[in-house]
Length: 204
Image (cartoon, rainbow, N blue to C red; front, side):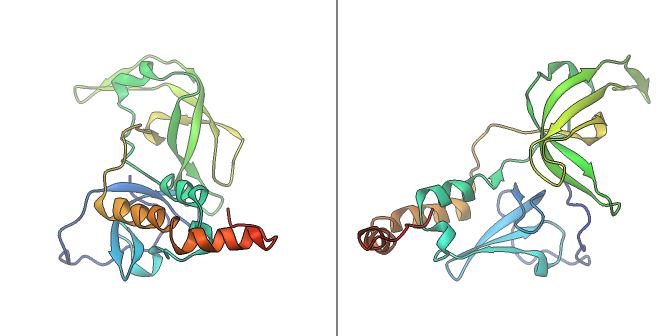
């Protein structure tokens, strides 16, 4: 899915063969964007597809928020395989409570992807346009993240993508997460133990 409301890069030849594509929930606005990952100087760099480098997210392996298994799990949850658009002929496959990724119209006119769950479907007869089936149903969703968290909204099929359960297979992400996990038995684990022994609070 293309990011919305962000400054695009000028057209230029690719600098490197692209690693596997995935989606990332941005640190800036908590919206989902297509992204590619790169390990650079030990840090994980998130490069949002087609957008300027100044908008990249960076994760420092020594950051306090990544100093525990809970922090690593939260980081892992920011990445997933791409969510394909809902096919016009497959709207009947949706079920109540199904996780979706839906375009949200912002107050400034931007449109960004946020997570939602399906509440209900208002069925409508499908039409045929240029020999292809077109869905006219309306989908009532409840936002589960973003600026309208908890709100209900009705959207059309063109705004709906289906979140996939397949595991992310990205070498840069795997290596970074493995490095973080392995560090719990070394310096980070020792620091947490020392903090607890001194009556402090370990990072979560």
